[in-house]
Length: 426
Image 1 (cartoon, one colour):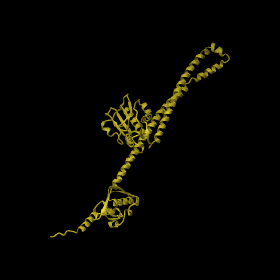
Image 2 (tube, rainbow, N blue to C red):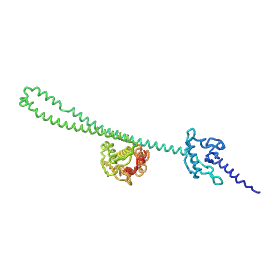
Image 3 (tube, one colour):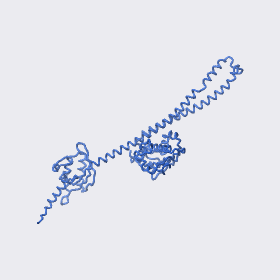
Image 4 (cartoon, rainbow, N blue to C red):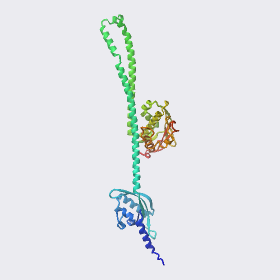
């Protein structure tokens, strides 16, 4: 039986029709004015049409808002002018009702048999679901960063309150000493002596020379003078302590206010000043827990950073080191704070202690969100600190030789001349 070969043009039309009817992605052919010549059934349904011929002759402006139709039209006209296609472009499609979809699009020139460009041919894949998931994950990441940053700021604020509380305790002690000193003062004895001398005003000389009580007056006056002199010294010392503690509170509050008002401001800072501020913010707790501070500060250039974030990191590291020293339970609690040149154009700031150390299995998890080895810890502090360091083009790392061997946290920040303020994320 003789087989009859189909007409080639008819076969091409048949194959194209079958292809356009069944392909799941959006396939379309447009003329030089970006009007649809043909399209897949899936694309017609995407436009809300039951048949492809309902779309023929129309443009993207008939279906999309100008925010998407205009750039799509300009892309197609550029392809027609230059003959250069577009491959794998992520497009945000805005519809007239305001809802948004996303497609991954490739477009190339459409040629006739003579090689002339007569329009464009394109294929788009709906990636709305994956893009929405990506956006949701990004939003969740930003929310998590904000939550971690707020937790870090809360830790700083908690440290401020603790330090103010410690200073207030010292104020209370000094006030009590002053009050007790005034209550126990011998001013009453001086009043009695005055009354006695008034009684003998007429024969005061004879009274002081011959009367047994009178003979004791000079010695009593010398005793009162010594007492008031010693009392004056003690009270002046307590008053000076009161003034010093009040100044300390003012410094802490002023520093916290400066920390709050410099959020988002990236500028050069002296690493030593930042470290000293961080020590001051933890001074009460360090003193109360008998932690010895060893400073090893080398001459380094200023760092370009956000002051609030650096303070957040250092205050958190110093506080964590204090906890590590307490947990080990030994008397020789030493925290070594180092500042020196880092690799490349960086400054290395280290907080090291001889505390409980970090087991090897925890080293890789120490900066994870929610990971903590402290009973009352929440795992936000180190996580938010690591994020803050990265946001400033720096890094935060940790080293420990194991449990009971202490730990060293290393913050590296760019020097002020190596990164411009505009390059650091706000």
